[in-house]
Image (tube, rainbow, N blue to C red; front, side):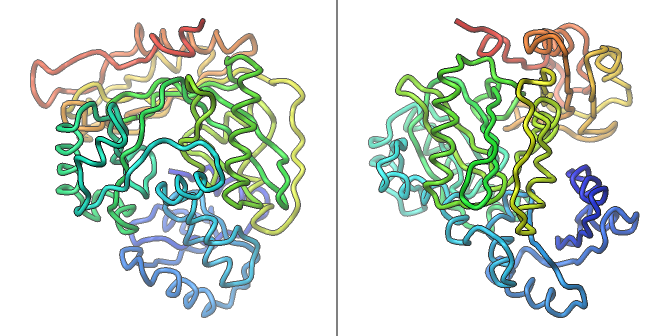
Length: 427
């Protein structure tokens, strides 16, 4: 839930109207006065969504000054709405290039920028040829994706074909609306090395902000995120390489304005792109950049959407040290009615310990595909990143008890925590 965004925009005096589906939490925010108005629209008719949205907007008495989104699914739609209204935006074609991973790969390849070996996977694809071209291990993921949905690491040809069939068989609009944009997938070369996020702000084609954070090792084979820290602990020279590569990737795709969350790896062959997200990153990305570097990406993105040039004041050195972890369910079952995060809240370095699942909720663990996140914990230190890493590790591995009644007795296990990888272990 992104309520904090709209609370901040209200503080800034921005009058926000949200257009979303019938079950959106924005309806309650309108009733509470957090936003100005909620307009219901059916997103399941994807081919007509832009025209229907424009028809609704022009029928209103309100005159809008900008259009923006903080959701990956909405990037291309928001750009088309802004374009149709003559408001500031990146060109819709540019947003499409980044939104569709296969188009991103082809476009960057044509510019002689490094891309992984890949094949587009559809129902008519020669699977043996695709696997032979890409090789194994490989990453299978939707061409339109978000939050690691449908992402799998596959080790063999047999596993690739089996996982693909399983994903396609399970696709429904109830799973996630990303499938409305297409169910093609992409099989691409596995990249070794640690992963990083680069948060970028562009104003009139100029880079006015670019900072890097460490991404912790994901929980494979689903590539489920586990946490991050800011600032990065990677060697400074390599940080500069990664930032330069992330910025070049965003500009090469044709972006000119706004906030970007660029995911990259530093491989044995140097920096490589995972994807360019043409919106602010999720979870605690806003908090990390604000706490450490003094830059509020929500505020800066809103100014861009209004066509106002931005020049954020950036702290010359980190104001603090920040780590965040997304706690994954270690097994499937039902959340217990206990205050299981109390030990985390008792730690003086913890500034957030927020449950994402409540008592009675059914949660999915690794035995039933991609695990659910059940909590988010954020730690801040005035001393060092290392102190935050140690605090998070102790909380997860030593202090918290798993608050789940197992669906299948005997499947109980401890929380997954990636402390055997970078940045917990460094050369």
